[in-house]
Length: 242
Image (cartoon, rainbow, N blue to C red; front, side, top):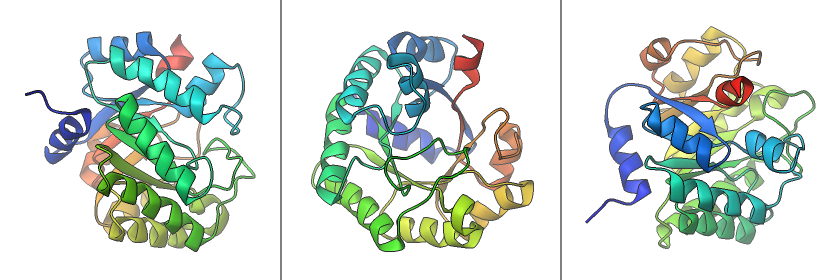
């Protein structure tokens, strides 16, 4: 019996090392990533918004459009696909439905973040986050969906570093882990020291976002591995070269 996408991702994450994860935006780019030998990919909301509706990553693309795109990507991909669930598209009930729909579409994991809606790209100015209570509500709703049977991992993201500082971002990451998030993602740390501090201060599996020209220092996977990161995401590398 073949393993589910979520089970395959769990198996990958059990290995030591930092997984290199180029991001895709359609079925062809996902197949190209798998064909090049990478073991997982991420459906980037930035890239899907740009290529599907020709719009920036400002919350304009709908849940239905993202699920439709993801269904095609997951069907075409031979490797686990992680999906961008943005803010969860509403309240706790909406977040839970988002997670369930992503699981049915075939995603191995779904990312839920704590920005206010409509959200912005993680490395742009002016983004803001919701309160601690609402952030925890979103992640708890996502975890509840998983516990109720959605076969999918929960990637919990905080953008609090930009607006409230790294200490607040770390508090949120630790809280997300305590309520059951599988993978943690503190977006847009602004120095090598901040990158190093995150896994040390918030135990768990961590993802780093390597964006060319972004706020975060662009480090090789081996350095990220030494810091304690399990995944290095490259959201625009392939799209920029296309």
